[in-house]
Image 1 (cartoon, rainbow, N blue to C red):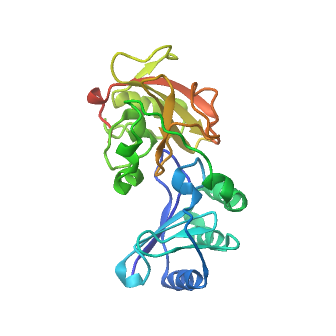
Image 2: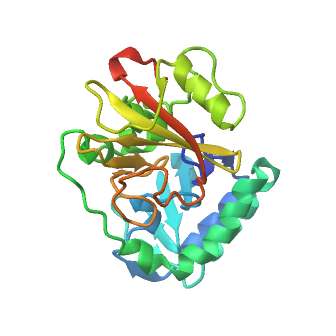
Length: 280
């Protein structure tokens, strides 16, 4: 039987994934069976957030587990047909983090360790966070959010470039020269190799395509934001939904000064014309 665990923590790069041992699968089954409190709540990470946003568990049929389980802030979402459950403490998430062992990058593990207890304490804040969509032509959340495969298999780079590949696109991969370090210049070069053009700060929307902005977190992850037709900006964090607010829930009028949470390094602007870009 096969059970994989994904730590949802990155926005641009693929998230860490590992397989559970048979003993760990048995432990997981026992921990899930012990949960008694039912809830209609969804995990707050379902709305999309930067940094740590829970664990995704995928299972083969012979494991005896649901095909997909998403856990964040003590809310255990069993997907279809099974009532969600609540933990009284984030013990399941803390245990899942230990199963990753040495396969977890140190910064990702640190973000998760910090986020598990923090998000559990404030889960009601995350669950009630308002997201107000703007009905403008270039911000079309339905395109990205209504199909779970599209939402989970396309990242911030896909969204910024407005190109669905279902491949968690990486800067430079489409041109055969994927970036090699999480540095502004290196990721930016990967993007220009894909067909984006470096730009100064936009003072108006372009005649064709859209301006995008590159930001970086601690030399371990990148993130992209996109300017929409009304000159405000929107974004998509990793497997999360497309949203048109910053990481404090406010409309984005300037990607340089908006709340970007862990993505503190502002790298610059680019012009993307989707028909001229090779995004893979």
